Image (cartoon, rainbow over all chains, first blue to last red; front, side, top):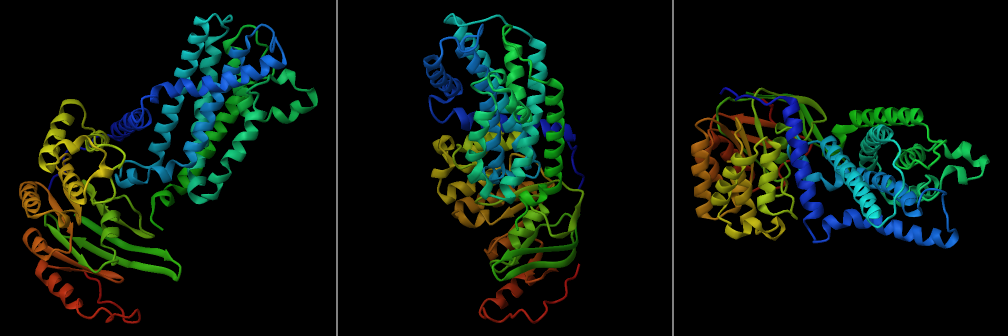
Amino acid sequence: MGSSVQPSAWQIQRDVIYALLVREMKTRFGKWRLGYAWVLLEPALHIMVLVTIFSLIRDDFYPGVPTALFMLGGIAPFLFFSHCFSKGLAAVVSNRGLFNYRQLRPFDAVLSRVFLEFAIYLAALVALLSVLAWFGVSTDFNNFLLLVAVNFFFFFFCLGLSLALCVVGEKFPEVAKFSPMLIRPLYFMSGVFFSLEQVPKEYHTYLVWNPLLHVIELTREGLFTNYQGMFGDLAYLGFASVSTLAFGLLCYRAYWRDLVRSQ
Amino acid sequence: MIKLENLTKSYRTPHGRKVLFQNVNAIFPEGKNIGILGRNGAGKSTLLRIMGGIDYPDSGRVVTDQRISWPMGLSGGFQSSMTGRENVAFVCGIHGIWGRAQRRVMDRVQDFAEIGNYFDVPVKSYSSGMRSRLAFGLSIAVDFDLYLVDEVMSVGDAHFKRKCEEIIAEKRKISSFIIVAHAMPLLRKNCDVGIYLESGGLTIFDTVDEAIELYKGEQPKPQSRSGATTPPAVNA
Protein backbone atom coordinates (compact mmCIF):
# COMPACT_ATOMS: atom_id res chain seq x y z
CA MET A 1 0.00 0.00 0.00
CA GLY A 2 2.02 2.96 -1.24
CA SER A 3 1.42 6.10 0.70
CA SER A 4 0.75 9.05 -1.53
CA VAL A 5 2.83 12.20 -1.62
CA GLN A 6 3.12 13.79 1.80
CA PRO A 7 2.98 17.55 1.97
CA SER A 8 5.98 19.16 3.61
CA ALA A 9 5.96 20.18 7.25
CA TRP A 10 5.80 23.87 6.33
CA GLN A 11 2.88 23.27 4.04
CA ILE A 12 0.96 21.48 6.77
CA GLN A 13 1.79 24.21 9.27
CA ARG A 14 0.63 26.89 6.86
CA ASP A 15 -2.63 25.10 6.07
CA VAL A 16 -3.37 24.54 9.75
CA ILE A 17 -2.70 28.14 10.76
CA TYR A 18 -4.68 29.49 7.85
CA ALA A 19 -7.65 27.21 8.54
CA LEU A 20 -7.55 28.18 12.21
CA LEU A 21 -7.49 31.86 11.35
CA VAL A 22 -10.48 31.52 9.06
CA ARG A 23 -12.30 29.57 11.74
CA GLU A 24 -11.47 32.03 14.52
CA MET A 25 -12.63 34.94 12.39
CA LYS A 26 -15.93 33.20 11.81
CA THR A 27 -16.57 32.28 15.42
CA ARG A 28 -15.32 35.61 16.71
CA PHE A 29 -17.08 37.97 14.35
CA GLY A 30 -19.76 35.91 12.73
CA LYS A 31 -21.89 35.30 15.79
CA TRP A 32 -23.43 38.71 16.19
CA ARG A 33 -23.79 41.73 14.02
CA LEU A 34 -21.61 43.91 16.20
CA GLY A 35 -18.77 41.40 15.84
CA TYR A 36 -16.48 43.48 13.68
CA ALA A 37 -17.54 46.71 15.35
CA TRP A 38 -16.55 45.35 18.75
CA VAL A 39 -12.92 45.36 17.61
CA LEU A 40 -13.11 49.14 17.54
CA LEU A 41 -15.71 49.61 20.24
CA GLU A 42 -13.72 47.98 23.02
CA PRO A 43 -10.70 50.31 22.86
CA ALA A 44 -12.95 53.24 21.95
CA LEU A 45 -15.03 52.77 25.09
CA HIS A 46 -11.90 52.52 27.24
CA ILE A 47 -10.60 55.70 25.72
CA MET A 48 -13.85 57.54 26.27
CA VAL A 49 -13.91 56.62 29.93
CA LEU A 50 -10.29 57.59 30.52
CA VAL A 51 -10.52 60.79 28.49
CA THR A 52 -13.62 61.85 30.42
CA ILE A 53 -11.91 61.24 33.75
CA PHE A 54 -8.62 62.88 32.90
CA SER A 55 -10.13 65.85 31.09
CA LEU A 56 -11.94 66.63 34.32
CA ILE A 57 -8.76 66.44 36.32
CA ARG A 58 -6.58 68.45 34.00
CA ASP A 59 -7.16 70.31 30.80
CA ASP A 60 -3.82 69.66 29.27
CA PHE A 61 -2.93 66.13 30.29
CA TYR A 62 0.26 65.81 28.32
CA PRO A 63 1.59 68.93 26.61
CA GLY A 64 1.55 68.60 22.84
CA VAL A 65 -0.37 65.30 22.68
CA PRO A 66 -4.19 65.29 22.75
CA THR A 67 -5.49 63.27 25.70
CA ALA A 68 -7.48 60.88 23.50
CA LEU A 69 -4.42 60.00 21.43
CA PHE A 70 -2.29 59.64 24.54
CA MET A 71 -4.77 57.15 25.98
CA LEU A 72 -5.10 55.29 22.69
CA GLY A 73 -1.33 54.77 22.61
CA GLY A 74 -1.59 53.01 25.96
CA ILE A 75 -4.88 51.19 25.70
CA ALA A 76 -4.46 49.53 22.32
CA PRO A 77 -1.23 47.66 23.22
CA PHE A 78 -2.54 46.84 26.67
CA LEU A 79 -5.73 45.30 25.33
CA PHE A 80 -3.68 43.15 22.96
CA PHE A 81 -1.59 42.01 25.88
CA SER A 82 -4.55 41.25 28.12
CA HIS A 83 -6.38 39.35 25.36
CA CYS A 84 -3.28 37.23 24.78
CA PHE A 85 -3.08 36.62 28.49
CA SER A 86 -6.63 35.33 28.90
CA LYS A 87 -6.72 33.50 25.56
CA GLY A 88 -3.38 31.88 26.33
CA LEU A 89 -4.60 30.56 29.66
CA ALA A 90 -7.70 29.08 28.05
CA ALA A 91 -6.00 27.89 24.85
CA VAL A 92 -6.03 24.18 25.68
CA VAL A 93 -9.41 23.94 27.39
CA SER A 94 -11.38 25.83 24.80
CA ASN A 95 -9.78 24.06 21.85
CA ARG A 96 -9.99 20.51 23.18
CA GLY A 97 -12.07 19.38 20.20
CA LEU A 98 -9.46 20.60 17.75
CA PHE A 99 -6.78 18.29 19.05
CA ASN A 100 -8.75 15.46 17.48
CA TYR A 101 -6.63 16.12 14.39
CA ARG A 102 -3.05 15.09 14.76
CA GLN A 103 -1.55 17.98 12.84
CA LEU A 104 -3.24 20.42 15.16
CA ARG A 105 -1.52 20.82 18.51
CA PRO A 106 -1.87 23.53 21.18
CA PHE A 107 1.01 25.44 19.60
CA ASP A 108 -1.06 26.06 16.48
CA ALA A 109 -4.04 27.20 18.50
CA VAL A 110 -1.88 29.64 20.48
CA LEU A 111 -0.01 30.93 17.44
CA SER A 112 -3.15 31.58 15.44
CA ARG A 113 -4.87 33.31 18.34
CA VAL A 114 -1.94 35.58 19.11
CA PHE A 115 -1.62 36.33 15.42
CA LEU A 116 -5.29 37.22 15.10
CA GLU A 117 -5.21 39.37 18.24
CA PHE A 118 -2.15 41.12 16.87
CA ALA A 119 -3.87 41.85 13.58
CA ILE A 120 -6.96 43.11 15.40
CA TYR A 121 -4.82 45.32 17.62
CA LEU A 122 -3.01 46.91 14.68
CA ALA A 123 -6.23 47.35 12.72
CA ALA A 124 -7.97 48.93 15.71
CA LEU A 125 -5.02 51.24 16.34
CA VAL A 126 -4.89 52.46 12.75
CA ALA A 127 -8.68 52.74 12.49
CA LEU A 128 -9.04 54.72 15.70
CA LEU A 129 -6.14 57.02 14.78
CA SER A 130 -7.89 57.72 11.48
CA VAL A 131 -11.26 58.26 13.13
CA LEU A 132 -9.76 60.67 15.65
CA ALA A 133 -7.86 62.48 12.90
CA TRP A 134 -11.14 62.80 10.98
CA PHE A 135 -12.56 64.63 13.98
CA GLY A 136 -9.53 66.86 14.12
CA VAL A 137 -7.74 65.14 16.98
CA SER A 138 -4.28 64.58 15.61
CA THR A 139 -0.65 65.40 16.16
CA ASP A 140 2.60 65.03 14.26
CA PHE A 141 3.58 61.47 13.49
CA ASN A 142 7.06 60.59 14.63
CA ASN A 143 8.82 57.40 13.73
CA PHE A 144 7.40 54.52 11.74
CA LEU A 145 10.47 52.30 11.99
CA LEU A 146 10.42 52.54 15.76
CA LEU A 147 6.80 51.37 15.73
CA VAL A 148 7.70 48.43 13.52
CA ALA A 149 10.53 47.41 15.85
CA VAL A 150 8.40 47.79 18.98
CA ASN A 151 5.54 45.75 17.58
CA PHE A 152 7.90 43.11 16.25
CA PHE A 153 9.24 42.57 19.76
CA PHE A 154 5.80 42.94 21.30
CA PHE A 155 4.37 40.20 19.10
CA PHE A 156 7.02 37.69 20.12
CA PHE A 157 6.75 38.77 23.72
CA CYS A 158 3.04 37.98 23.70
CA LEU A 159 3.58 34.73 21.78
CA GLY A 160 6.11 33.52 24.34
CA LEU A 161 3.86 34.56 27.18
CA SER A 162 0.82 32.82 25.68
CA LEU A 163 2.79 29.62 25.13
CA ALA A 164 3.90 29.60 28.74
CA LEU A 165 0.37 30.43 29.89
CA CYS A 166 -1.24 27.66 27.86
CA VAL A 167 0.92 25.22 29.85
CA VAL A 168 0.13 26.99 33.12
CA GLY A 169 -3.60 27.12 32.37
CA GLU A 170 -3.69 23.37 31.86
CA LYS A 171 -1.38 22.33 34.69
CA PHE A 172 -2.78 24.75 37.24
CA PRO A 173 -6.35 25.58 36.24
CA GLU A 174 -6.74 27.62 39.44
CA VAL A 175 -4.44 30.26 38.02
CA ALA A 176 -7.07 31.18 35.46
CA LYS A 177 -9.24 32.35 38.33
CA PHE A 178 -6.53 34.73 39.46
CA SER A 179 -5.81 36.15 36.04
CA PRO A 180 -8.03 39.26 36.47
CA MET A 181 -6.18 39.91 39.70
CA LEU A 182 -2.88 39.80 37.83
CA ILE A 183 -4.05 41.87 34.89
CA ARG A 184 -5.73 44.67 36.81
CA PRO A 185 -2.62 45.86 38.70
CA LEU A 186 -0.68 45.73 35.43
CA TYR A 187 -3.22 48.11 33.98
CA PHE A 188 -2.18 50.63 36.61
CA MET A 189 1.54 49.88 36.48
CA SER A 190 2.10 49.87 32.73
CA GLY A 191 1.51 53.51 31.98
CA VAL A 192 -1.80 53.01 30.22
CA PHE A 193 -3.02 56.40 31.46
CA PHE A 194 0.18 58.06 32.54
CA SER A 195 3.68 58.60 31.33
CA LEU A 196 6.61 57.55 33.44
CA GLU A 197 7.83 61.13 33.71
CA GLN A 198 4.61 62.00 35.54
CA VAL A 199 5.50 59.50 38.26
CA PRO A 200 7.83 60.49 41.13
CA LYS A 201 11.42 59.47 40.45
CA GLU A 202 11.77 57.09 43.39
CA TYR A 203 9.28 54.66 41.83
CA HIS A 204 11.01 54.55 38.48
CA THR A 205 13.47 51.85 39.49
CA TYR A 206 10.61 49.47 40.18
CA LEU A 207 8.32 50.36 37.34
CA VAL A 208 10.93 50.10 34.59
CA TRP A 209 11.19 46.35 35.10
CA ASN A 210 7.82 45.98 33.44
CA PRO A 211 8.33 45.29 29.71
CA LEU A 212 4.77 46.36 29.00
CA LEU A 213 5.61 49.86 30.22
CA HIS A 214 8.40 50.00 27.67
CA VAL A 215 6.06 48.84 24.92
CA ILE A 216 3.59 51.60 25.74
CA GLU A 217 6.21 54.31 26.18
CA LEU A 218 7.90 53.36 22.91
CA THR A 219 4.59 53.09 21.05
CA ARG A 220 3.69 56.63 22.11
CA GLU A 221 7.15 57.81 21.19
CA GLY A 222 6.79 56.26 17.75
CA LEU A 223 3.35 57.74 17.26
CA PHE A 224 3.76 61.29 18.52
CA THR A 225 6.59 63.72 17.82
CA ASN A 226 5.81 65.68 20.95
CA TYR A 227 6.08 62.70 23.24
CA GLN A 228 9.29 62.51 25.25
CA GLY A 229 9.77 58.80 25.57
CA MET A 230 12.99 59.09 27.47
CA PHE A 231 12.34 56.01 29.56
CA GLY A 232 11.35 53.56 26.88
CA ASP A 233 14.29 51.27 26.20
CA LEU A 234 14.12 49.29 22.96
CA ALA A 235 17.10 47.14 23.89
CA TYR A 236 15.44 46.11 27.14
CA LEU A 237 12.21 45.34 25.32
CA GLY A 238 14.15 43.24 22.80
CA PHE A 239 15.82 41.36 25.62
CA ALA A 240 12.51 40.80 27.42
CA SER A 241 10.92 39.66 24.18
CA VAL A 242 13.61 37.12 23.31
CA SER A 243 13.81 35.72 26.82
CA THR A 244 10.02 35.46 27.17
CA LEU A 245 9.80 33.70 23.83
CA ALA A 246 12.58 31.31 24.82
CA PHE A 247 10.87 30.63 28.14
CA GLY A 248 7.51 30.06 26.49
CA LEU A 249 8.95 27.71 23.88
CA LEU A 250 10.82 25.77 26.57
CA CYS A 251 7.69 25.40 28.70
CA TYR A 252 5.72 24.24 25.71
CA ARG A 253 8.44 21.88 24.55
CA ALA A 254 8.66 20.30 27.98
CA TYR A 255 4.95 19.78 28.52
CA TRP A 256 3.14 19.74 25.19
CA ARG A 257 2.34 16.06 25.27
CA ASP A 258 0.83 16.39 28.72
CA LEU A 259 -1.47 19.09 27.39
CA VAL A 260 -3.19 16.75 24.96
CA ARG A 261 -2.60 13.38 26.62
CA SER A 262 -5.50 11.82 28.45
CA GLN A 263 -4.31 11.34 32.01
CA MET B 1 2.00 -1.67 8.55
CA ILE B 2 1.31 -0.62 12.10
CA LYS B 3 3.52 -1.84 14.88
CA LEU B 4 2.89 -1.33 18.56
CA GLU B 5 6.09 -1.37 20.58
CA ASN B 6 5.93 -1.85 24.36
CA LEU B 7 2.79 0.20 24.53
CA THR B 8 1.68 1.06 28.05
CA LYS B 9 -1.25 3.25 28.84
CA SER B 10 -2.96 3.90 32.13
CA TYR B 11 -5.51 6.30 33.52
CA ARG B 12 -5.59 8.07 36.83
CA THR B 13 -8.60 7.16 38.94
CA PRO B 14 -9.43 7.90 42.57
CA HIS B 15 -8.44 4.29 43.37
CA GLY B 16 -5.02 4.36 41.79
CA ARG B 17 -4.03 3.95 38.19
CA LYS B 18 -6.11 1.79 35.94
CA VAL B 19 -3.88 0.08 33.42
CA LEU B 20 -5.35 -0.34 29.96
CA PHE B 21 -2.35 -1.82 28.20
CA GLN B 22 0.83 -3.12 29.72
CA ASN B 23 3.82 -3.51 27.42
CA VAL B 24 1.75 -4.48 24.44
CA ASN B 25 3.63 -5.56 21.34
CA ALA B 26 1.71 -6.25 18.19
CA ILE B 27 1.96 -6.01 14.45
CA PHE B 28 -1.25 -5.27 12.64
CA PRO B 29 -1.47 -7.13 9.35
CA GLU B 30 -1.07 -4.88 6.37
CA GLY B 31 -3.87 -4.22 3.95
CA LYS B 32 -6.48 -5.95 6.07
CA ASN B 33 -9.61 -4.46 7.53
CA ILE B 34 -9.49 -4.88 11.25
CA GLY B 35 -12.37 -5.05 13.68
CA ILE B 36 -11.70 -4.25 17.32
CA LEU B 37 -13.87 -5.79 19.99
CA GLY B 38 -13.90 -5.46 23.71
CA ARG B 39 -16.06 -4.59 26.62
CA ASN B 40 -16.89 -1.06 27.54
CA GLY B 41 -13.86 0.61 29.05
CA ALA B 42 -11.41 -1.95 27.68
CA GLY B 43 -9.57 0.82 25.87
CA LYS B 44 -10.80 0.48 22.30
CA SER B 45 -11.20 4.18 21.71
CA THR B 46 -7.96 4.94 23.50
CA LEU B 47 -6.10 2.47 21.31
CA LEU B 48 -7.61 4.10 18.26
CA ARG B 49 -6.62 7.55 19.47
CA ILE B 50 -3.07 6.44 20.17
CA MET B 51 -2.79 4.89 16.71
CA GLY B 52 -4.22 8.07 15.22
CA GLY B 53 -1.49 10.09 16.90
CA ILE B 54 -3.81 12.30 18.92
CA ASP B 55 -3.24 10.71 22.28
CA TYR B 56 0.05 9.48 23.70
CA PRO B 57 0.94 6.33 25.60
CA ASP B 58 2.73 6.43 28.95
CA SER B 59 5.60 4.60 27.30
CA GLY B 60 6.26 2.74 24.10
CA ARG B 61 5.33 3.86 20.65
CA VAL B 62 3.42 3.24 17.48
CA VAL B 63 5.51 2.73 14.37
CA THR B 64 3.90 3.19 11.01
CA ASP B 65 4.62 4.48 7.55
CA GLN B 66 0.98 4.94 6.64
CA ARG B 67 -1.20 7.96 6.59
CA ILE B 68 -3.76 7.38 9.29
CA SER B 69 -7.00 9.28 9.59
CA TRP B 70 -8.31 10.94 12.72
CA PRO B 71 -10.63 8.64 14.67
CA MET B 72 -14.05 9.20 13.21
CA GLY B 73 -16.16 9.23 16.31
CA LEU B 74 -19.34 10.84 17.44
CA SER B 75 -18.18 13.39 19.93
CA GLY B 76 -14.85 14.83 18.98
CA GLY B 77 -13.86 16.68 15.92
CA PHE B 78 -16.78 19.01 15.51
CA GLN B 79 -17.06 22.47 16.92
CA SER B 80 -20.68 22.44 18.00
CA SER B 81 -21.25 26.17 17.65
CA MET B 82 -20.14 26.08 14.02
CA THR B 83 -22.32 24.87 11.18
CA GLY B 84 -21.74 21.57 9.43
CA ARG B 85 -20.43 23.45 6.42
CA GLU B 86 -17.93 25.43 8.48
CA ASN B 87 -16.75 22.29 10.21
CA VAL B 88 -16.21 20.50 6.92
CA ALA B 89 -14.42 23.56 5.52
CA PHE B 90 -12.16 23.63 8.53
CA VAL B 91 -11.25 19.94 8.31
CA CYS B 92 -10.57 20.35 4.59
CA GLY B 93 -8.42 23.37 5.38
CA ILE B 94 -6.16 21.68 7.88
CA HIS B 95 -5.66 18.89 5.37
CA GLY B 96 -4.63 21.35 2.70
CA ILE B 97 -7.81 21.25 0.62
CA TRP B 98 -8.82 24.73 -0.44
CA GLY B 99 -10.85 26.55 -3.02
CA ARG B 100 -12.50 24.57 -5.78
CA ALA B 101 -11.47 21.19 -4.38
CA GLN B 102 -12.94 22.17 -1.04
CA ARG B 103 -16.29 23.10 -2.56
CA ARG B 104 -16.37 19.82 -4.41
CA VAL B 105 -15.72 17.90 -1.20
CA MET B 106 -18.36 19.94 0.59
CA ASP B 107 -20.99 19.03 -2.00
CA ARG B 108 -20.12 15.36 -1.69
CA VAL B 109 -20.29 15.41 2.09
CA GLN B 110 -23.61 17.24 2.08
CA ASP B 111 -24.89 14.76 -0.44
CA PHE B 112 -23.71 11.76 1.55
CA ALA B 113 -24.87 12.99 4.93
CA GLU B 114 -28.33 13.74 3.57
CA ILE B 115 -28.83 16.54 6.03
CA GLY B 116 -30.07 19.06 3.47
CA ASN B 117 -30.46 22.52 4.92
CA TYR B 118 -29.16 21.41 8.27
CA PHE B 119 -25.74 21.68 6.67
CA ASP B 120 -25.90 25.40 7.44
CA VAL B 121 -27.12 24.97 11.00
CA PRO B 122 -24.80 24.73 14.03
CA VAL B 123 -23.79 21.14 14.74
CA LYS B 124 -25.09 21.35 18.31
CA SER B 125 -28.65 21.14 17.03
CA TYR B 126 -27.99 17.94 15.08
CA SER B 127 -29.44 14.62 16.13
CA SER B 128 -26.89 11.91 16.84
CA GLY B 129 -27.80 10.26 13.56
CA MET B 130 -27.13 13.44 11.61
CA ARG B 131 -23.93 13.96 13.49
CA SER B 132 -22.67 10.48 12.69
CA ARG B 133 -23.64 10.83 9.04
CA LEU B 134 -21.66 14.04 8.86
CA ALA B 135 -18.72 12.50 10.70
CA PHE B 136 -18.60 9.54 8.40
CA GLY B 137 -19.30 11.61 5.33
CA LEU B 138 -16.31 13.73 6.14
CA SER B 139 -14.15 10.66 5.80
CA ILE B 140 -14.71 10.86 2.07
CA ALA B 141 -13.10 14.27 2.10
CA VAL B 142 -9.52 13.30 2.77
CA ASP B 143 -7.59 10.36 1.38
CA PHE B 144 -5.81 8.19 3.91
CA ASP B 145 -4.13 4.81 3.78
CA LEU B 146 -5.93 3.77 6.90
CA TYR B 147 -9.23 4.95 8.34
CA LEU B 148 -10.06 4.73 12.00
CA VAL B 149 -13.79 4.37 12.59
CA ASP B 150 -15.02 4.61 16.15
CA GLU B 151 -18.64 3.50 16.60
CA VAL B 152 -19.91 5.98 14.05
CA MET B 153 -21.78 3.43 12.01
CA SER B 154 -23.65 1.95 14.97
CA VAL B 155 -25.91 4.95 15.32
CA GLY B 156 -27.45 5.34 11.90
CA ASP B 157 -30.47 3.62 10.44
CA ALA B 158 -30.37 0.74 7.95
CA HIS B 159 -30.21 3.10 4.99
CA PHE B 160 -27.19 4.90 6.40
CA LYS B 161 -25.44 1.66 7.26
CA ARG B 162 -25.83 0.50 3.70
CA LYS B 163 -24.36 3.73 2.43
CA CYS B 164 -21.45 3.42 4.81
CA GLU B 165 -20.78 -0.06 3.52
CA GLU B 166 -20.81 1.22 -0.03
CA ILE B 167 -18.24 3.82 0.91
CA ILE B 168 -16.09 1.25 2.67
CA ALA B 169 -16.35 -1.08 -0.30
CA GLU B 170 -15.22 1.73 -2.57
CA LYS B 171 -12.46 2.94 -0.28
CA ARG B 172 -11.02 -0.44 0.55
CA LYS B 173 -9.69 -0.77 -2.96
CA ILE B 174 -6.92 1.63 -2.00
CA SER B 175 -7.20 1.95 1.78
CA SER B 176 -8.03 -0.16 4.77
CA PHE B 177 -10.16 0.33 7.85
CA ILE B 178 -9.92 -0.26 11.55
CA ILE B 179 -13.41 -0.39 12.98
CA VAL B 180 -14.55 -0.32 16.56
CA ALA B 181 -18.14 -1.45 16.93
CA HIS B 182 -20.49 -3.50 19.01
CA ALA B 183 -22.61 -4.46 16.04
CA MET B 184 -21.46 -7.96 15.12
CA PRO B 185 -22.96 -8.20 11.62
CA LEU B 186 -21.24 -4.98 10.67
CA LEU B 187 -17.88 -6.29 11.81
CA ARG B 188 -18.41 -9.67 10.13
CA LYS B 189 -19.25 -8.00 6.88
CA ASN B 190 -16.47 -5.43 6.76
CA CYS B 191 -13.51 -6.86 8.61
CA ASP B 192 -11.01 -9.58 7.77
CA VAL B 193 -9.11 -9.64 11.01
CA GLY B 194 -10.41 -9.41 14.55
CA ILE B 195 -8.74 -7.98 17.60
CA TYR B 196 -10.05 -8.70 21.04
CA LEU B 197 -9.13 -6.18 23.69
CA GLU B 198 -9.21 -7.03 27.36
CA SER B 199 -7.61 -5.85 30.53
CA GLY B 200 -3.93 -5.50 29.98
CA GLY B 201 -3.54 -6.57 26.40
CA LEU B 202 -4.90 -7.50 23.05
CA THR B 203 -5.18 -10.64 20.99
CA ILE B 204 -5.14 -10.74 17.22
CA PHE B 205 -7.22 -13.36 15.44
CA ASP B 206 -6.95 -14.36 11.81
CA THR B 207 -10.67 -14.00 11.34
CA VAL B 208 -13.04 -11.62 12.94
CA ASP B 209 -15.36 -14.51 13.83
CA GLU B 210 -12.93 -15.89 16.38
CA ALA B 211 -12.79 -12.55 18.14
CA ILE B 212 -16.57 -12.33 18.07
CA GLU B 213 -16.84 -15.79 19.61
CA LEU B 214 -14.54 -14.79 22.43
CA TYR B 215 -16.40 -11.54 22.92
CA LYS B 216 -19.72 -13.33 23.06
CA GLY B 217 -18.34 -15.90 25.45
CA GLU B 218 -17.54 -13.10 27.85
CA GLN B 219 -21.02 -11.70 27.80
CA PRO B 220 -23.12 -13.76 30.26
CA LYS B 221 -20.71 -13.64 33.18
CA PRO B 222 -19.95 -10.03 33.93
CA GLN B 223 -18.10 -10.71 37.20
CA SER B 224 -15.90 -13.48 35.82
CA ARG B 225 -12.60 -11.62 35.62
CA SER B 226 -10.83 -10.55 38.74
CA GLY B 227 -7.65 -8.52 38.66
CA ALA B 228 -5.53 -11.39 40.03
CA THR B 229 -5.58 -13.59 36.94
CA THR B 230 -3.25 -12.50 34.28
CA PRO B 231 -4.80 -12.12 30.85
CA PRO B 232 -3.89 -14.52 28.05
CA ALA B 233 -0.51 -13.80 26.61
CA VAL B 234 -0.33 -11.06 24.10
CA ASN B 235 0.78 -12.30 20.79
CA ALA B 236 1.62 -10.74 17.53
